[in-house]
Image (cartoon, rainbow, N blue to C red; front, top):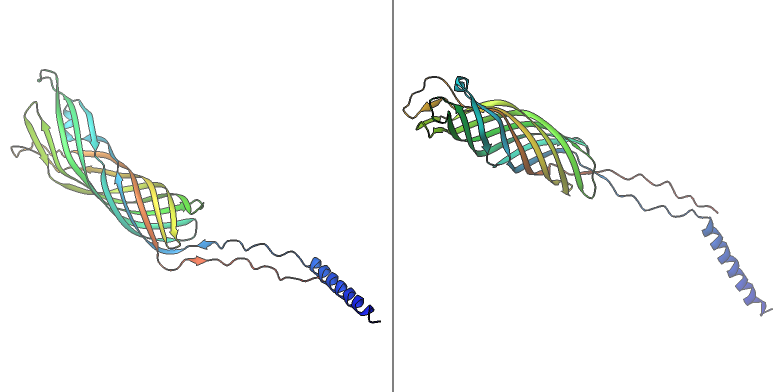
Length: 275
């Protein structure tokens, strides 16, 4: 009898382990790992921008152009820096809007006209121009974020607003006739609109940097009345700059005011044990 006790005990252990193994086999597989928690950033934000402009003017115009044939041979602006600030609101991960104010620094202008003149030996005279242009521009913008990959979000946008365009230091030099005229500084408000395309990178849930291209239509501008070197002028004839545009490259920074909101993951169904 004593020899049977170890055998009975071993048999009980085998049966116990077999029952435990069978119960383990009846348990459902463990749930998958929890998905990453998406960050939904929304609310008010501040922004700052710096960049450089590449400006253009479609044509020049002057009251005296009607007196003869005039050809614009050259009319170009140098690149110039600009800086801006703004405040906006991000409605969700797809749509945001802001209002911006921007100072666009002085850009140097050079131009050259050729006009018909039968009294000159060649039959043509020339006028060369110099000036500077600057703007104060304010825009209301809306942007559409197109999804995020590895923290990078491409976006497009559009804006409308007003621009105070200033022409200063305007001079008109005619070497052939030894004539010189100048125009005083002149500013005017014009309707402005913009189109955007760029990439944003979310450094932290509250801080984002942008690299963007902008096409900006600034309307028109003009100099003051052109006065001759002798102080006289036969008519009111400021130089007009028609259809001013700029293709800008800019770097922007956005600071979210307040904490980012994280959405909670879906709860797992309760674990049901089978026996």
